[in-house]
Amino acid sequence: LRIKTYGSYTKLSSSHLAGRTVISIDLLRSGTSMTWALVNGATKVIPTADAAEAVSIASRMGGCVLGGERGGVKISGFDLGNSPFEYNKEAVSGKSVVVSTTNGTGAICGTEGAANVLLGCMLNCTAVARRAVELGNDVIIMCAGTDGDISADDLYAAGAIAETIIRLSDGDARACDMTLVACMVYKSWKNDQRELSVTHHCAKLIHLGFEKDVEFCLRRDITDIVPEYRNGVLGI
Ligand code: MLT
Image 1 (cartoon, rainbow, N blue to C red):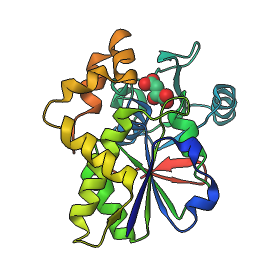
Image 2: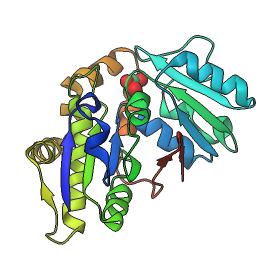
Image 3: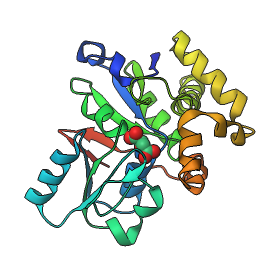
Image 4: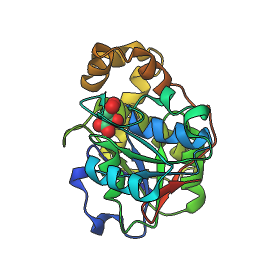
């Protein structure tokens, strides 16, 4: 099983994805928030790149929760922003959720053509790695990144997941150079996550007052739920 990591989803086209398991990562924060919505009983999550499209899907469906951000801040008129704490049981249980965020939702929407698309974050690190090993296909770890650039927080989660896949696949995994770099990032920061606060997106969120969100997004293995993206919908 080969593990190839991309620092930004914009580097990928559908020809890379055929027959592969894609693990889509946007650690801060949309991947974590969408996972948390499903943990808290949302019936499905529909990610969209475009905010206007999210509004039109939500009004067509009716009765759903509309969430998302631009620049880290809740989109005006939406029910929820992009803090995982907003996607609690009270807000999302038994409901469909439509979400549009700056980078993370667009990343997932571009995965058409992959054999399977899983949503990975620190909250479900071991569970998503186990699922990828079970599926048995080559793995693409696709980081959302920030505006086409690498985001070190995504690389941190990619490293945690890649290291776990390597451990679970009994010597059968072959990591590309970017995967090795991601594993090094994870190894060097895992024992002192405060070091992550110097990274671009983390610093921005802390500046906006979302320090608790960052702490939450870095919690490891608190759920076994692995969201899977099929036909435009994330579900479990
Ligand atoms: C994104 O999709 O770019 C992020 O989730 C932004 C954020 O942290 O709100």
